[in-house]
Length: 70
Image (cartoon, rainbow, N blue to C red; front, side, top):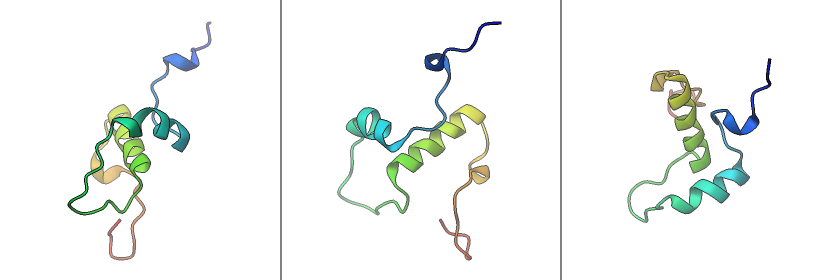
């Protein structure tokens, strides 16, 4: 049985270095509106995990405070 090639697997998370090299260059960072409380690379990793697993948003492991807010 052949081993799966590492370049053929679907990425479900990116390290910060890969995010800054490949993704951040293509994002438009707005100057108006609210600032996200989570870093952008964490948000992209949540989106990748959602696309891979097909889970509901409420099932994502987002850390919340005692009031249930991220």
